[in-house]
Image 1 (cartoon, rainbow, N blue to C red):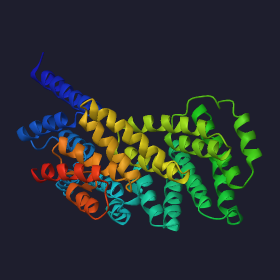
Image 2 (cartoon, rainbow, N blue to C red; image 1 turned 60 degrees about the vertical axis):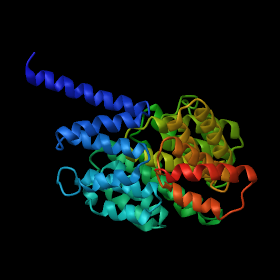
Image 3 (cartoon, rainbow, N blue to C red; image 1 turned 135 degrees about the vertical axis):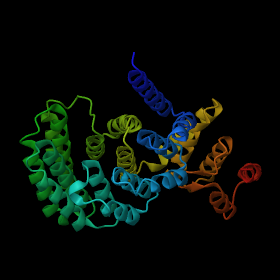
Image 4 (cartoon, rainbow, N blue to C red; image 1 turned 180 degrees about the vertical axis):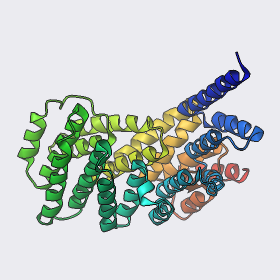
Length: 380
């Protein structure tokens, strides 16, 4: 075997090893692996991106941002670096910053996923005109590329449905007409089962927004693929809203659980951010936030008792973010940060969280737990 072939096999093996560490949530091992590679050669780009992703998933966002900044000057890496910085900004709910980061990429060069990220940044700043203008621009510029044209058409239709959700039923007509027209345009070319499901749930959602439950029910009943598994997270979100709207909360919650599983399978950082936002937004609109936070906290307790502190930290963080008014969620999060000797996790700083807890009235049990956590945090 030639030396070049041996070198390629070794590289492929290391890449696979890194992906497996990440898939198993063993982020510390992944970080150590990529750092070791970069110590020998700092020019290996896949190792840089692997390290950035590992630090991101481990919740060490400050480290992650510093590494991304170092890649902004190179022509080969700067656009992906700006996408990463926009992801971090979205995750920290700094939507104006996310927009600024993506402004560094020409609109014509934005990937489909980066476009969705910029649309989300516009949406959260109530810049509806800018969002629609960008989607129209991307749709028309991809007119000859059927798959992309259809995807941007559906995204534009979904944005009109989103606008209709925000206003009274008497003010929804124009947005709903625009959405249904776009869905119809895209459906001429969308003939696979998943696309048919997507079309059905979007039209059923539009019918519910019009106040026509009977029509929504008929659309679902007429769909020959209604019992097929849904694979796309946006379609799952539509389905959850429809089943809730028709009075089937158990069916909606079942799809929501599947949606969370799909989100955990996302490999691209933009897909992760978009899926996480979509799920949280859907839960919030349907009043499921508190129940979901309790479930995350219970799962975190189980992981903690099993000694899996990384998974426990992720669950406690989700519980706290979803429902920060429960001191026990914050204390459990701090305890897991102590176990991992991690002073900051994602957008939570341990000292700032301790200050927040000091400012409120706690039960004797929670006060005792906080008093034990403080010296542990101070040590690292």
